[in-house]
Length: 226
Image (cartoon, rainbow, N blue to C red):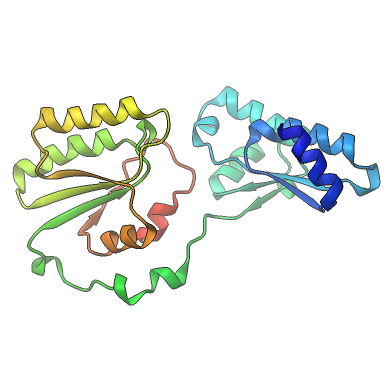
């Protein structure tokens, strides 16, 4: 499937660059490029990886670096620290380009998102977290912290925005059970998926933005919140 589609695309489009968004596809992409392109006309293979879990585990990080060294012409890192890690794993610096996650400045400067009230004027304090529901994003940690905060500050509410990632349904059930066990259902809200503008509006009207994720590379949610 993937190899056949890629081969047909390479023959039809003759691109200068093939961008590999997941390292699991890198070797197969390399093989297809070698088989379908002449030596002098082979497109450059540029790779990247959004998986912070891979780069936290030493053995997986080493293996991923070898794949990049052998099968990619270049690599895009999201953060300076990640680029430094790759250099320490044997990747040449001239093979790396750092491009941090971007954001839409026009959307963030919308008048609808302007919120200039001081904390003293806000009757209900809101803590907002925007992230897909999965164990790596650590919503359970925020819920436990919320319980401690609510005991001291009864006017604080927590809005956890985000859809459940496929395969994380059991974790989602654990979050509901945790909220019930701690008795914080009236203050902690699993909002679910909302559109971009709604999420940004909720951020603009929040008192605090939380981000308790267990592992990240360059989270766009933090950039947009700032």
